[in-house]
Image (tube, rainbow, N blue to C red):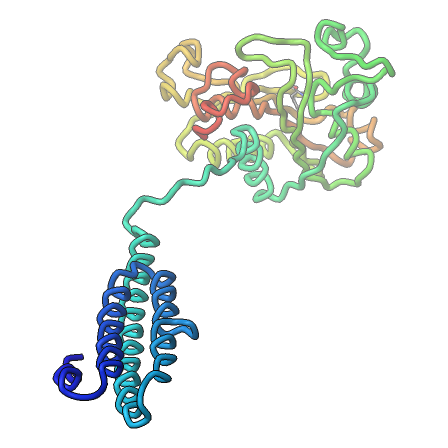
Length: 356
Ligand code: PHE
């Protein structure tokens, strides 16, 4: 940009010298203005101010009219050279600003891959549902099929067909929820035996889980709770089959080492009847609060299906025999996790439920 300076002082008319000086000043000003432009928008404004149609160089161009004809080529050459220089400065500054802009964005949008991820809270299965699936899977693996039946049940299915006659205490208002249509909320899942055995021919191996209802409420009883019914009907089925299946079940659920015992019991729909106990999972049989110092926990009721029940379903007890068992899924769940209050299972408190 100093190339023409000597020339300015020595040659041409005052008008030419003045114009050449202004062209130089324009270049110096443009360089400053581009340098001051802090972003691309400001630079564009500066570019228009110098190189635009009505910009400073265009204005200087108009002054050529005041020059003598032989001075015009020199001024034109000078103006073009300075203009080229200004165009170059503009491009240089633009590149600088673009690079700065990219750096700035890279910094602003930087992702710290070492930051710990944000955990997405996920739902999970209710502990009773987990138990239900686990228990069903064990019986499925032994060849049992899963069926369902209604929660609002006829008295025939829930009681009579199961040999629970009308004078039985279980049929008292104290224990059973009656609906206004002469039906009951099923008090156990044993009615599933009646529904399925009436419909299907033996041989049968069925389990059925679901809600049952009783007028009962304390720390170990809830008016609504869950049971699983299981039964198997075939030829020459004995108590031995019952023991084998239930011991396999307990071992699958609590481990092969846990001890079991059968105690005689009574149910109107099984004969003989028994209750299955297993060695207390909390004290391994030495006696604790959970097993009331007995070393044993009651797990389920069972027995050989009463001939009257088979006959009520149209199955000939001279040809077929079977066993049945019923267990509380709530109880299994409470034993599994050492939960001592059944209400915790039904209050839907996430602080409790998220532990499983
Ligand atoms: N239905 C019985 C109860 O609710 C359990 C049971 C089922 C017992 C099948 C024997 C056979 O307590």
